[in-house]
Length: 248
Image 1: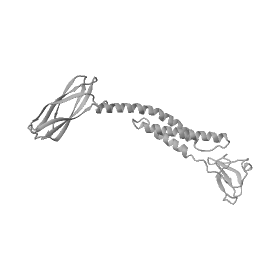
Image 2: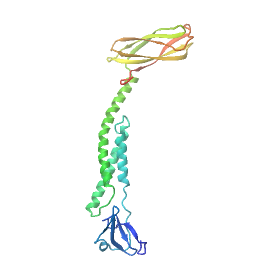
Image 3: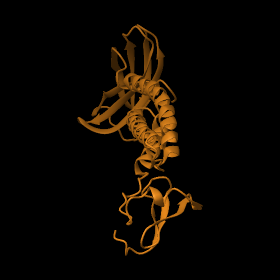
Image 4: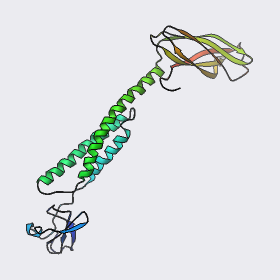
């Protein structure tokens, strides 16, 4: 800007304060910091130019971004599977926060203190460290969830068979047994499909719990529908899943 620039408050070119007053011809000793006005006695004498040819005030965007990333990471870091996203966010917040703090320290050492969100950056670093700790919890919970899912879809070796399939009072009756051929105790959810002339018309599920290694457990199911004909009825095992490790 030239000396005929409109008088007003502009970012302090000396970086000593946030703003300095330019009277239209030269800089003055009037300064402001955090909405408070002061007088800087060495300000105008230290300037070798008359116009406010200054750089734009430093942005706090990086500090704000680091703080937001840290908070979001803290909220999801403990969640199974999603903890990976939380870990990435925490690492990003940590890096950005450290960059802001190092930049601030460098400016202070050069005698040009700047307001670039040091407080937000410090908070972001602390929260990011806490989020990293929660990621350990998220990792352990992920292992539990994956183990439970594996137990559900992979119930181990077994032998299942249908021993009886007939109509009784118009309802389809299926009875059978399942043998646990694993070395651990398992529970099973067995789904039976009722078919007439080879076409599936209904399914039913039955749970068998705590079948020990090498043991055999019996099960029985009955359809809700009526008018099943034994002559046309067949029963087949549609699927066998394991028992959920936690809950019903």
